[in-house]
Image (cartoon, rainbow over all chains, first blue to last red; front, side, top):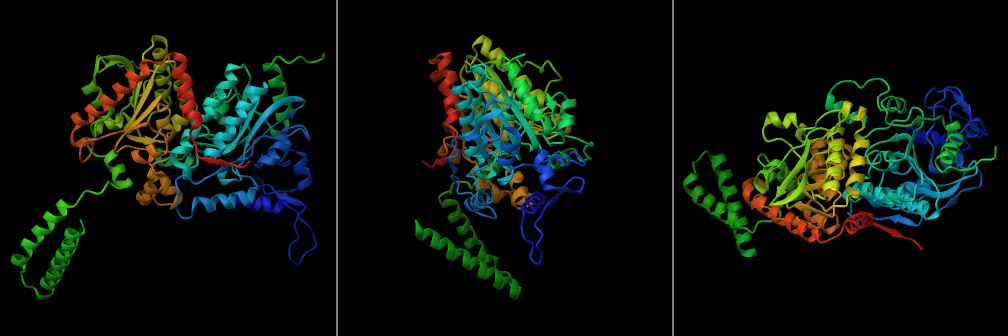
Length: 284
Length: 317
């Protein structure tokens, strides 16, 4: 898959027969070569075409939070194969492979930190792990992050990147839609803001649960966001989908998200928004 | 138990041999074959029935003539007063509802209605709701909460409608709101999966205090066909996917996702709608009676705790 290729190339590595480490990356959208140091300095937005390159959870934390402010929460919840799910490959093998690839137990990273000095609790979905799919671990960790935010009086930000509920945990995955909703209720009761940041792609059971019941919904430019996937819809209506369908800008136009915010502006946007919603005093 | 099966196998082998001989030689051996065939049929019928496979149950859940939500309402409710529209865009015939008396008890009904004939099935999109359906459900739940009416929700959908306009009008948003509203109700909520429980479109009206399922209904994160086309790029592998997804009533009871399996008449609910309805009516009424004793706060916190618990994981120290 293209994303894997991209991240492989990004790592400096010795090609056989050459002594030149990889210094640049090809933008998946405009195909232009971009220096890696420019990408990192520019929140992984292509400086040539503005394409928002997909991030893994660690990169997201780095882009969003004040440097050095992140403290991980939990991270101890491990997936299990309760259904003994077997398709072309055993679920346990799939899990092991994804864990090795990402260095995480599952498709979620949670923690606390600050954004321009505003304290937040943060949950980030990791698309690199099994397409960011939501099983029992993702549901549980998001619920715990929400409960942590409620208990410690911080706003909650959830960054979504997910193909939806995880098939290999079947009805247990489905129930995570309800579980996360239950946990988020604690923030409502305590008058604490919950902001979701929808990134490419956010679909299925994630769109139909915690992602879209946020107080404020922010989307990244160009992100694909929807319930049913474009292929399924195309099969249903048997005609081509309009240009830009289910993209962040399309959803803004249809009143489904509050704002589409460039990744390079997100820190300032979120710090200001959370300051306003929590009636934070600022020195004039 | 093994003797008759051996006899049956031997008989079947003899029938096969004779049929092969008849074919090879062109002789008519029916005189010899027919009594043997009759005996094979008799022995087969006398075999203890194995439980249906998961895929067989999926097919029973979709059987022609299986009672729809309104078939249960006709048999169990009086004064069903359908209330229409979401007050925003339209009225969805795939998800309907309104107050009624459930075996005498005033309740708010939420029904996923598939349609009973071709015309009404198309009109109701085979029970696949648009955002308007879920927004109407939220509206009716507001009324139930306001007037203290218990909610009875009958789930029967392959999933929310995957249409272009459904997406434009926020299908995911509507489902998420419906889940949240149901979780926050201060009245008893009893859900019954009466046929198909497909994904978020089913869960949207599935988060109650007691979740029940009929013996041959299924409930899963994705339909067997959907899973098969993702795993094997081939929807005809649905029977394999049905096995892997553990989507039957006994599976869900074991996973703690449902409280009770409601028995169906022999051969499935479509064989005897009256008998199926009696069992559904009895179970729902019993749970409503139990829940009636609980106060509003308990109903809400118990329901929240029920769903907060669900999931399977381990934890490292």
